[in-house]
Amino acid sequence: MHNPLAGARHLVKVKEIAVVKTHAFKKSASLIRSAAKLSVIASAVAMTLTGALAEGTDSAHSPSGAEVAGTASGIPAWTPVGNVGAGWSYGKRRADFFKYKSDKPLYTIDASNVDKYADKLNPGQIALLKNLKGFTMPVYPSRRTCGVPDFVAENTKNNVGFAKMNADGSELADAHLPGYPFPAPKTGAEVMWNAKLHYRGAGVEMRDIITVVSPRKGASDWIKNVSDAWIYQPWGDKAGTTFAKVNQVEGNAYYAYKSPAAIAGQAAIFTTYAGKPTEVFYYFPGQRRTRRMPSYAYDAPQIGFDNQYNMDEALVFSGQTDRFSWKLLGKKEMIVTYNDLGMYDFSDKFEDAYGPDFVNPSKRRYELHRVWVVEATVKQGMRHTAPKRLFYVDEDSWNYLGAVDYDAQGNISKVREGYVIPVYETGSCDTLAFAQYNLVDGRYLVDGSMLAAGRDAKWSVDSSADQHYKPSFYNADNLRALSER
Image (tube, rainbow, N blue to C red; front, side):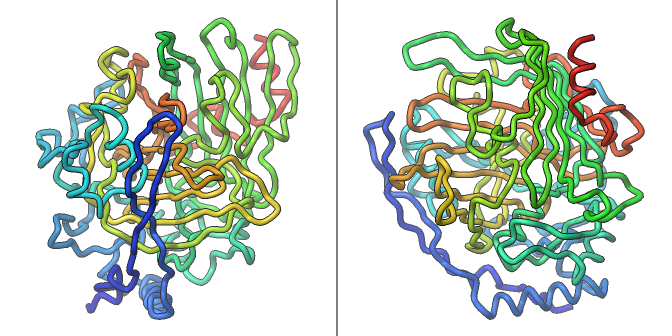
């Protein structure tokens, strides 16, 4: 069948110009800035795709809406993924069973050759390469390891003509889940909803996870906050549901700090909705009380991280979208983090994983992939410490692979990398681990990574597997009961 999107990436011409200054570094660099709109033709192409998906006649696109065809530049064709972790069982290192574990880097990007590859890098990556001494990006063969189970594919097909947003895209009224609401997105908001509702099973458990913040310049003390955490998606079971039937709950989360002593015993429960504020309850052991925290959202600093970690930076992006306008800049071939199983190595040693200025490059893997590029601009009358942001979303899995935040002066302030991996339990891909580099003060943080945790993350496809995968778990009374045991 003729591919209705063949050459569609050429419809969106991306011209990039930017100059970025940072307060921590005295250098400046010419960077890429996307500045194009999807044309009327591209919208018509997207409509053709949605019709083919709904009819089940589209062989040119994957069940998630990605282009099946490869490219001459090195992106392979997408094929049904199958098991890329044959022989693995929980407790074993995931990287040891990865189908492509013997891959070697094709080349490495550093400060000396960054300009050669600049057209395939985002502005934040260029800033890191030019300003962080020793920062490198090892680029491996591209492996399209992300698929979805059949029931997610079926729900995605059924979303064509069914999934609905409000006028500005800040609210999703309904969609068949688990599935992708908009497999052929025409707006930035549609891309973001696909990413926010990407399939990771019913939930994921992370015990003894270490959230790391590097020392202040000239100091040696790391922040190492250890917690147990769960993420629950109330629509993630195989049986399926609709977003309306789960009351537009995007997801729930619970974490409880175990160390250091200054925050041990603190715990929180979150319920994130589409269309109304995130509900947050926080337990403070010194006060023996649970507090509702309605302002603990957006760019509010998270407790315990020295003002390095804002609420909506978790998992590359979390929480509400209503403060921003979302513009789709198109789809582009870019060098991005991918198949980063090294970032989930629970058996690793802390000192082997984390350098003073960045994550050890041996833990990071980069590949050439097609990504959706979305520009977020703060709405008039709204405020945010990052009034402009760029997001990079994988075409195969709808995971966030990167983000760049700009301050009010138009300078890059923070750069995030999302480390996506094939999840052997779910038959899909997920991003838990991410790194954030602060270009203002030169510090970085890592969260969601099981590096040096001593045990692996555990994804569950069935909500009956754990008490944490029940809506009734996520309330103030339960938080207090758990915290005071």
